[in-house]
Structure formats: structure tokens, C-alpha cells
Length: 136
Image 1 (cartoon, rainbow, N blue to C red):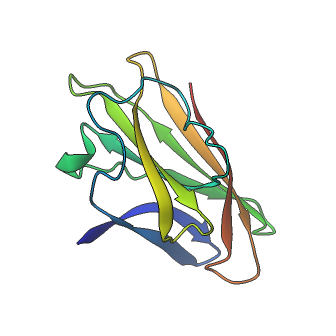
Image 2: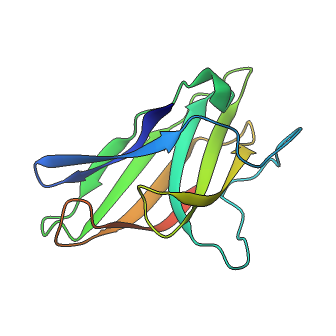
Image 3: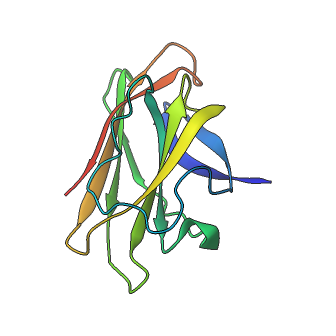
């Protein structure tokens, strides 16, 4: 079972990474932070943002942007907090589309207003690399 998450505009094509809809690692209350945790030996390759707990599957669609040369792209999310808070899924592995060696979930603080994910685009529509992700 899966659903679609982060989408990156690549020229006229739209790329979406499939993500399994399961809690992979965090148990109990996840940490409250503004970015995905750095994990030794792991590379952050994927993020998804949810309006409420990820089990509710209410992932937020980002505004998509890219430079004129289609070499850089970025997704932005304007956040409106609800009582269940905004959650981020952090996927670690080798490629945006998976498989993921590890998945972590974080809850954003109530003060978070927006998030941004920056990507480097390659020659093929599926050649997308997450460069950084943060929320403010």
C-alpha cells in the first residue's frame, strides 16, 4: 500500500515519489524540530509533509518552482497549524523514489510557518536529488 508524496516539476513533466504509508521507525512521541534529523551513515533523500498525523494520510501539496534551465527546483509549503499539528516524514536512502533504508517522523513546532525543499535536477525526469530541507 502506498501514496504519492513530494512532487517536483521537471519541465512539462511532473515527478512524484511513491512512499509506503507505514510508520517505519519513530515510536511514541516524535521529536519537535524544524528539519529532519542528521543520521550518521544515512542520506536524506525524501520528505513529505502532513496536516495531522501521517496515519491520516493528509499530505500537503507543495507549490512547485524551478529555474529557467531546469537544473534547480524547489518546493514550498505555507503552513496553517491545526490542533493535530504539522508532521514531516523524512526518508533516508540512495534515491528520491526509494527504497528507503530508514524513515523518521517529526512534528513541527506550532510556530512553523513554511517549509522548503531544494532539489538538483538531472538530465532525466527521474534524476532528482534532494539538496536541503528546512522549515521556519
